[in-house]
Length: 360
Ligand SMILES: [Zn+2]
Image (cartoon, rainbow, N blue to C red; front, side, top):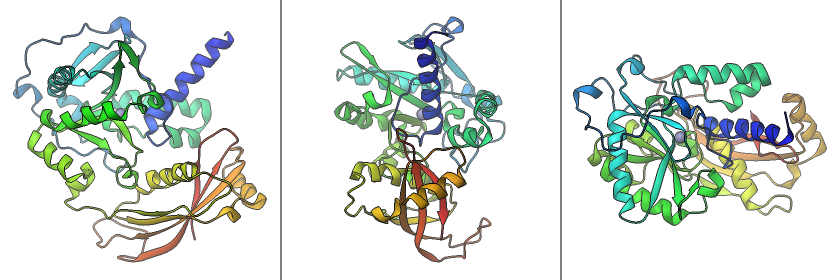
């Protein structure tokens, strides 16, 4: 294998990991299948989808790190395939696809051009990816980087990852797409009209479990509900739970070691992990100070996460509230405010923050 091939293969793995994990940062995207040969041609103006065809799919189903794909979903699912502008086969739930084509046509009137990077991924696909990563990198690494099979919203066929076409050029890498906030604003303003919502809102990682993804949209069918969710600025989780979580307050202090951006990245990792703390409400996060980055602490995190090769440490402290009811079994004391809880993160010389451990 030549060097460029090795790099390309590595880039593909990195892209895949980030797309699958959501909480990995904002690096490369475009992890779609390259098996364009078995793709079907675009059916942009094909017959509309009847209601019966999509019977059995609950367009308001919540699938996230805590809620798996509902039983029987894949049997009931009706999908369409098409080939996107980069030549990849994309599979979308039928009614969501029709709505997407309307959205796309609507945006083109405003001079905004989009396509779909990725939509449906089956549970079997995810299991195969998990098995491959486990074999190559070990179970710990695989669990950290690949979304658990059954717990990705992309299984539904209703979650769509857009990419931009700017001046005729495909813009598919996440960090490149992030350079066009004004284009995303125009796109987001049109979503609800077609029954879509933006799924992973900026700052709400502690609720959704994912960092901000302007490209990941979710079809929920009913424009009235989509408008309500969008208008209130809430997450789909909050809509489904019938309650709105309080805002998180931040104090990044005055670090000589880390920029504010670096500390914000660490906080996003903590918040992504916090979303899996069922029923808990995060209230605040603060940086413990540069004193946390001692050789002893670096050594300690490298002992916990053997072979990780961390070179730097961040400690974040936070306050959160435990569940108020016993609906689900919980390890916490009920209805209690936990203060100064510690989250410890490490990073290698050239890597992003990894949450290593948390506790008192
Ligand atoms: Zn996505």
